[in-house]
Image (tube, rainbow, N blue to C red):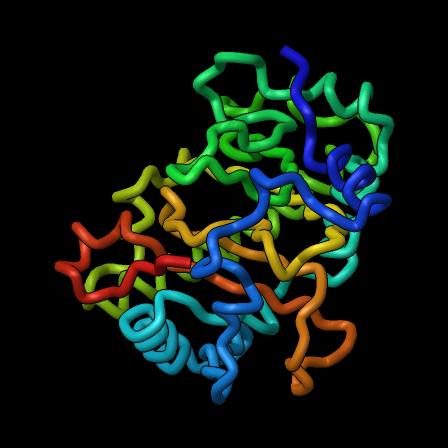
Length: 269
């Protein structure tokens, strides 16, 4: 069965100035209806470079208890590493469709890895306006390079460099959460796999849409992970962040609840 990617649907939709019915959300879900127009809530921003570890622990603990999300700045990942990662992701989705399909998730496969479009429709039969590329990046024993694009040529290097840096940041987060729960700094990381903890890369591509008021790229959900680190393409309204800085958002999910006695808040996003 030939799979129709959202990127291809978008090209046709832009010329027709409409979108297929299966992408149109119910009125209660449409962005124009659900957009919040009150005061913008201030998501906690945490400077990970602060030399006061107790302060970082306290701020992360508070953010995870009250929000389940925070913005991390000065995290130590070089801007060029972040830029290269975003660049190779963008270049992959600019490849000819036939070349992208070489990395497609195998039909009927239970793995999440590969290039794809979410084919499972929701209860109401709707689809999300997004294509993606998904693959493991750590540990080495879990990496399937068949899902890593050979083009652009720098794709592998960019992912490996980013993963190396990101693992250091995540180690710091685990330590801070452990200390915030009055545990030894190593406890939470070891509880979820230690050095064999799996890291997955997911690059979402949201094609241009003629009716963004009617559809969604991602529906409300909870990720099945301990952390999700979101690197946004652009961040609006963060004027206090230097232009050369790449902040990212840390989502804290439900997996650790059993270790924290329900003290921390998992995020539905």
